[in-house]
Image 1: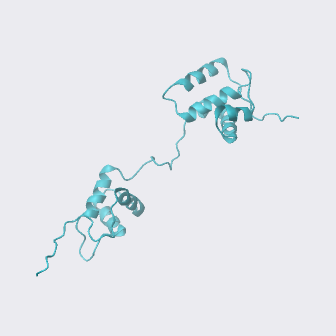
Image 2: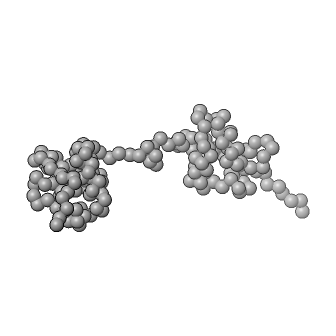
Image 3: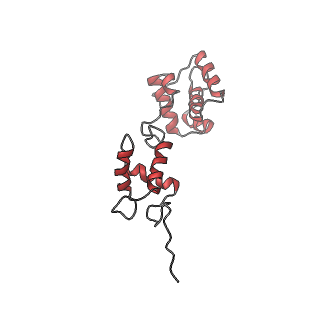
Length: 169
C-alpha cells in the first residue's frame, strides 16, 4: 500500500517553460538549477511524475533536499523556492576588517612598541586601534588578520628595523 504524498507539485505550462529556461541560463547557480530539476521531475500535471527515490537518482541530490524544496514550493510558492537566501552570519556578511583596516593593523603591529612594553600583544593592539580607527575591532578579528598575513607577535622582531649591536672584538 503506497503512502499518499503530503506535498504535491502542480506546475502550469508557463511554470514549466520558465523553469526550463532558468535551468539553461549560464548565470543560474547550481542550487537553483537543482531546485528547477526537482520541481520539473516532481510535477504531477506533466507526467511522468517521479517518486522521491527516482528524483534522487535523476537529480543527484539528497532526499531531504527534495523534500524541503517540494515543501517550500507548496507552502511559499515558486518565487521563494527559487531565491537564494544568504545567512546573516555568512562569511561575506558585513566584514569589519576590509583592506584599509587590515593595512592599519599590520602597520601598527610592525611599528614601534609603546613605552613600557617589550612587544605587541593582541590586547595592546586592540586598545591602540580603538584610538586610530573609527569603530572598535575585536581581538579575534585582529588575530585573524595577523594570522592571514603570517605575522607572529611572539617573534623578537615583527618588522621594525632595530639597530644590531656589534660586539667589540
